[in-house]
Image (cartoon, rainbow, N blue to C red; front, top):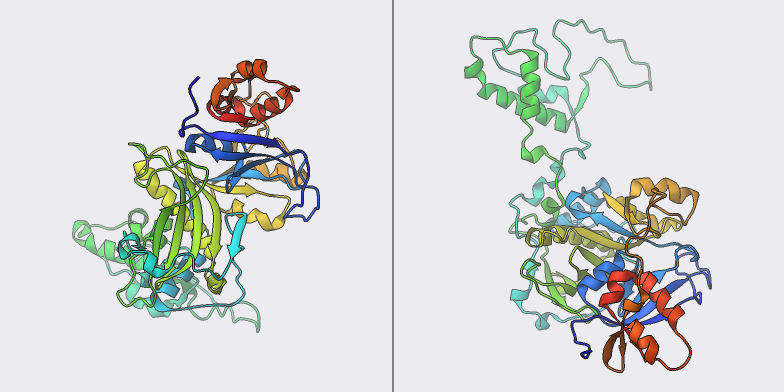
Amino acid sequence: MAAAGSSASIVEYFGGEDGYRCGYCKNETGNLSHGMWAHSMTVQDYQDLIDRGWRRSGKYVYKPIMNQTCCPQYTIRCQALRFQTSKSHKKVLKKMLKFISKGDVSKGVSEEEPMDSHIEDVVTCDFAYKSESDVSQSELTPLSVDHSERVENEDKDTGETKEEVNAQQVESGSLQVCAHKDTTVPGEPSHSAKIVHAPPKPGKGADLSKPPCRKAKDIRKERKLQKLLQNQTCAFEGSELQAGDQVFLLQNSKSKTNQPKTIEDFVFVSLPDDAQHKLEFTRFLCNSPLEAENAPNGPECGYGSFHQQYWLDGKIIAVGVIDILPYCVSSVYLYYDPDYSFLSLGVYSALREIAFTRQLHEKAPDLCFYYMGFYIHSCPKMRYKGQYRPSDLLCPETYVWTPIEQCLPLLEHSKYCRLNQDVKAVDEGRIKELGRVRVLHKRTVMPYSVYKKRRKGPSDEASVQQYASLVGQTCSERMLLFRS
């Protein structure tokens, strides 16, 4: 056999039956996991490992013993291409945009998600990770790169405005077209209907003697309908425009600006020239066990581990560590300056990484998921990851992805459970031939069946069997298990 090359993953398995302190429930010995040290690892091998419940912290790769550990940790992934921003996510994005464009700042107690909104390992520090002089201007990417919509329009996001306008203030919005006088506008009372207002009782509801208040978005819809109908006046001249036609025009008048905003509308929005602050980003390869790779059909930046640096007015305020893998972007760490915690940088960085995943998908079609680490339902503070929808949890027994909506009722009943409800389903990637496990021994690669015969001393078959069952047949035949 030839000596191992740099293109192969080389791991050293440690087992891991001894319990240690849990950072979630504080149990002194309840945290149980298997572990191995990755001397090197290909991105494909790590992709396959995280799809079997593994996770890296630096070069240490570990897998919780799900049916024994005090706080079972389920691998969670967000379907980035179908991701929809929630109201709380939009608040964070708008807060950042307002701060950058206008200097608006609110340092009150945040009602948003925790600072560590998408990763377990978050470090607050007053750091100077890289001085401004160390980064050339060409390496920095400004916030405004794609869309033309300005920040001033962000407060007009349909579906969220709570502004109400008195109907008397929008008389100019009433329909002025050649329609029958009895024709009704959707949502408006008929002119022929007799309306009787009873005097309101003190402290009991609205004053019915006054015109009703209406939401601003409804007013805008009516104005848009009016404009559309006016444009159609000539076509309908000499004929009556029926109510059904008005409904049809209203439904079809919904332009792109009235559609729910995508995450890109917030993250890649163009800023005004007089913006108060300047937010920029730069990305560097960082030291990790993952071997950097480039592929013709892969992302331009290649695969591997990267530092995503967040620069505000020439000062670095946060660093996110991500792994770009064949099918996903996996979030690893976030370091941030606590002076800027009011910007909810954990939430913001997660949303930006989702948007980045969608960008990479355009060049690398297979890359379409955003992995957020572990979801821990038994720890209420760690449930926020389930708010990034749609998302799936990994079944700890069959390694099949299951929509989180189907998992939550099961996890309410038991902190550990088999998420795949198909009783006939099995682990399709389970170890079938132990002898084919690849071993690196004395700088020589060989199958375990050969190494077993050469080995001197007590048998290590139980340890190798455990390793192979955890990493699966595919990885066990591709990775090199170091044996001294």
